[in-house]
Image 1 (tube, rainbow, N blue to C red):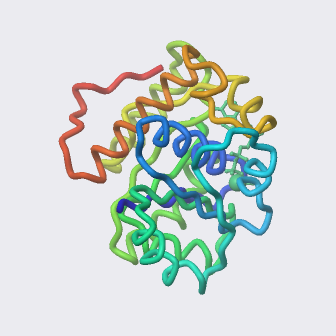
Image 2: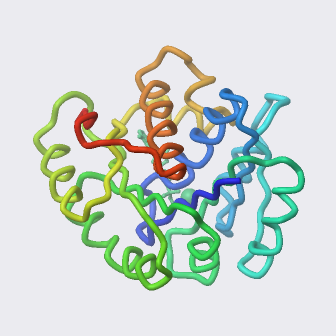
Image 3: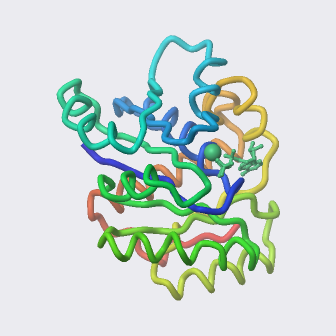
Length: 218
Ligand SMILES: Nc1ncnc2c1ncn2[C@@H]1O[C@H](COP(=O)(O)OP(=O)(O)OP(=O)(O)O)[C@@H](O)[C@H]1O
Ligand SMILES: [Mg+2]
């Protein structure tokens, strides 16, 4: 069972959006996936409430003390991928999520503010000795100097997913309708980007090479 924590103490970077769309994309590939919502705001739990599809992923809201004991139970249920959505603040829930994670994904918009604001998150991840990777989100569609500059800056940290996600209305619509972008419109660009990010993330968690040669910026 792989455990992915999506973390950034900055609000609105796309943690919940990535959590549910990656989870839906994983289920579409027959990877049994469970989302844990650690955010009292409950964005992912509410998304689940709007969901009409019968299949997975399921979403459970847990607090910091409930998280670690829940992992063996999920494993026993045959869950293969756990995706933890965390609040955009420094809380015990975020620390607990990092502690159980095999990989932490830090969504950041291609802005100096987001990248600067991620420093405490990266410090917490370092302190707990966990691997992490940034993923650029809400980038201007198409080739953009801003995205490329942000990508190069994050590359210096040695950890940025090769697929930046563009700002696309599909993500907002998917949040509103309880869908993942891959089921909302299977042939959309947003869907393709999420599938590519899932592949990259799974490879990283499995320790497979995901060389920078494959890097594609917007
Ligand atoms: N790639 C994207 N394209 C368009 N809209 C996006 C994208 N990613 C996220 N959004 C939108 O940005 C808003 C914030 O996203 P989201 O709620 O996922 O962020 P968050 O990091 O979970 O926020 P919080 O810290 O408050 O939990 C939402 O309205 C979402 O639909
Ligand atoms: Mg959220």
